[in-house]
Length: 252
Image 1 (cartoon, rainbow, N blue to C red):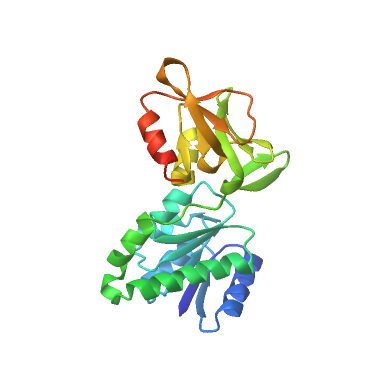
Image 2: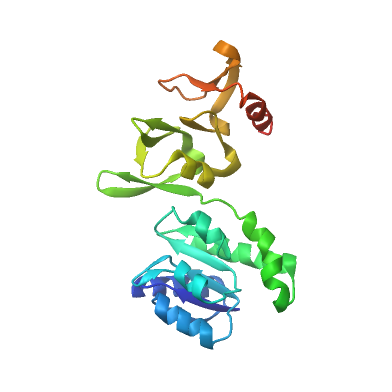
């Protein structure tokens, strides 16, 4: 299997290369590219690899600039320190989205997924792009979201989050151990990142299904959402959203 690595930090690129080779001795790393310019020139003059590992923030732009400039048909595993590009990544042949710092375990999971997809579709090279379209549309969401806490950037796993909420026009989240963090995102962006595991009950709250104990009738035909973890505000579902919410809740 031929692999290309796109990463502008030399040490990180080498660590990634060593991890891949350690996990799969059939891999040949055919190129390690450091910039948008270098990658564009490479793909214009070389055969397409079987798989690409790609950072997003490069010294001369974003790696998406590469994929907008040249046609890249290989599946891409994005490996980045930023969670906000997940949606763009899955629209650019992305099959996995790994948050740095990566580990052998996260790289192994990504390679396993690639090999599973390759076996499942087993298509001719000319049809590979079309066959993978369905996979890209249903690609998994990132496992964590990055938050700023004091002078640090902290990954918070989505399955550890009770809910997202708006406080003084700022998006916040609360975890099951009742830690609160501020995010530099909108509630709409959080909703897109979280997928079907979370439900936006109203304009202020996005709630994790596994955090819901039950729902009870409230004023004006609304529902009150009762959580497994105490929260200072009453969370209600608008009557317009009640049928959709109950259907979603019944999927648990």
